[in-house]
Image (cartoon, rainbow, N blue to C red):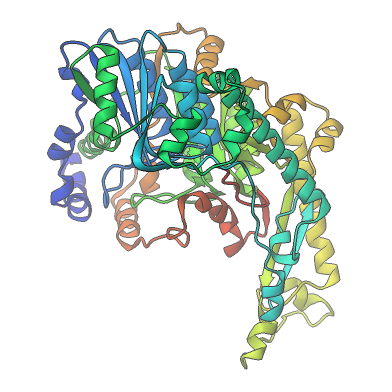
Length: 611
């Protein structure tokens, strides 16, 4: 009976998902780790040239395996550094970038391996953040002959759309809780208000100080200071051509990747280089196929053996739904809640590390996720590891953790609420399009209340006050959540809330975090709190959603549910923000609930991409 039930599913899945370029047998063969074949000493090559996302790798039946994740890289470094065959590392950066938090942690991890395991870096271009990483982590820093060191200092830029909206008679009807919650200023102002400027400039100043201090303490920074030059002037007065950067002491050598490979082998005194991390080394595709086949055959393997720590990475805007078999960005309350319940009920998992990189989004979704996290926290240690950004709804999630770790350059806080809508009824009127509201109740004000989500009409004052009261209640709820999670009086939380963003360094002073550290430190803390050995297994969750969660079905789903799930996959279209550049997607996705029926957000006031 079971064989008959699942046979049609296998055929359909193979029809929609397995083209010639993604046959399971070919994929599994292609993704085997080449290190398993190494007999002698090797230099381990870590290929970051295709980017390094906090978002967990997702296997799509339409596009195959995703790019490797940051959590995988941290674990790869940990395994390789203790492998007797590893004599050194080669970091291949290409033109890719790192977030500030990633640069801090990776610099520490790889820098600690010197001099026993020499580390060599090669890039086509170094940014502010990757230069900090390279000078902290690497014995030798290589740059391509036609490359650049774009070390130019830190600045923020913001766009203000008020005059554009006025020209087209579009109105931004927004309210906010917290004087620093400047989300709406993009639409309602022609420049920053004083509180918004104060908040952003303070964070930028904190990041700059951490950056300069890190460069000054690096190998190159110490040499530059010894030579009587100022690190700050070299760091902020680029961009530098290769030979100029070499003369300034910002890099060690100019050449091609092949030159850097030869250098790495000579320093490690080995003949072989083996790539153990990169796009060609993705291994979870085979795991996903195996999971699918077990599901189809009804022989799902038990996941309750061996005590371990689970690492659950979340990234992007927060909404009620999201993701899917075709990919997709963001944190889905529906699927993440299922995953959290699974981790909570799995007795083999003794602690959970929640990695967060999110500017926030839906207030409702954030609170639902917070509830599931608090239930998990009651059963086992829950450590939050904050990446580049964990603010507003991202911090809403984090405050449920037993302990919170962040880097000094992480962007956190923004404890506040914003809500509203864009109204273009008057703009349509100029084009000869009229909008008329027909309330069922003829009492005065009934029409404005009933159409309060409509983009055709602005709020009248009674409706505006009702929305303000609703937002105030959600803001108070947010404060209470932080108060409960952080064991701080609500009045103390209120003083550091108001929608203000903070750097990790500032957040430590006001008790928004418990300590500095990255994912590796969070994993170590989780093992300690769970009473596990240092070498206990760490399981990285294979994507933000498991296969069943991607399909949005349960293991006991009937045939009609499965058919409906597959129909959704076939009909799936690119998301509204898929064409945006990667740094802007999480911010844009955090606004997505406004396109639906939600009008209250816990979202960052702006996108921050500081390189």
